[in-house]
Image 1 (cartoon, rainbow, N blue to C red):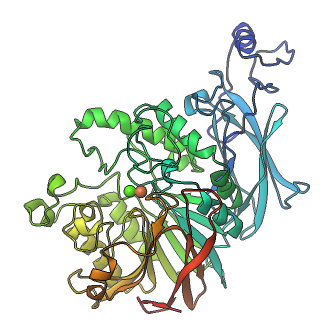
Image 2: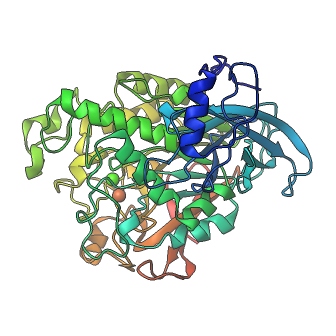
Length: 526
Ligand code: FE
Ligand code: CA
């Protein structure tokens, strides 16, 4: 079964087909008809499913299944420049005996032979297992889970959040432990890859990037492939559906709309951005609705989990105004207070307002990249350069969003974020100068999977500023992920930390737990 978008058969002359087949050592099925199915039975010189499998964007009746054919993952993929038909099947049991749906998708050379199969007709709120087949090759089996029926009473949901997985900074041990949780779904807050060249970026590196800084689609493609060759990351994807968003390093450090931090002319930066957008789509379990045209990739999208949780994934990078005050990081410059500056852009702001207006859910989650409660990587004061890249660096946009929440009397709003390589649990105050007054939401910021290396129990400056920040309930500078368990009455976040990432085999433990009671924007220790 082909999808709506894949009706066009591949037309390739039999002669060209045989030429390519000879070149790549592929077995050709004898056929007298033109090749409408290119390589229905291809034979690969190397295993094509080196990047594993993934699923994502769970709906009540469906899921996206992802893989990418890459027998030579670090060298552009190693596939010939023709389309290949890939079969998929999804079962209600882990042994793949009770198949409930099957179909096939074209893996196109233009899209790096990635496969995005949008499966529908599934049942809400249940586990499934899936795999792919091409020629005689079978992929590993992945586990996934559909969203519960919309609006229906839901007693409990359990999901993970993670981000900032710099390959060079350490082993993906936290991904391995996250995989063992078998979450209902996993949110990735961005910095899935880092764009730096092999000898750039990290100082105390544990592993090394392949290649130079990323500019072309093949550069980005190879970098995703290097990360996805890691068995711990593969295990994480195979364990649960992911809802992904990006931050800056999927494209370029601290990019904002059509600008990078080096002042590259926009028309030049946009070429790099388009390459990065395409490779991101190729590498992620995203729906066709996100498909990258030459100028954009639509990443903001909403999910509903029964009557329990609205979950809106946001994009604070693609439509934002440039950071204020340049690299100097002075919060006093004129642009800082400019009321027209935006994080989401007008269209996404309107979309989010409509989502919040129509929500009847117990909990409303805004899942995005950068902290809004005031925290930063270099201490909490809002005039440090790092924070200028986050919500506090966009005071008018921050206020517009928080006012919008307050005006709708939306209780139980939870922000999720990453970016700063620290675990934080905090209340979100309307006014950053009065952190213990007029709190409108809570925020949970996941630390990194690896970025920053082994880390410590607390950042060096934390104790000096702690007393001035009564709205912070938890802080850690260890690596790890968050485990969130949500019921109609309470939200519980476990801050999971690994003791080390510089060497393999780190152990996982719960660094802390915060609980939010329904109706109260405060996260307290339990
Ligand atoms: Fe990061
Ligand atoms: Ca970041």
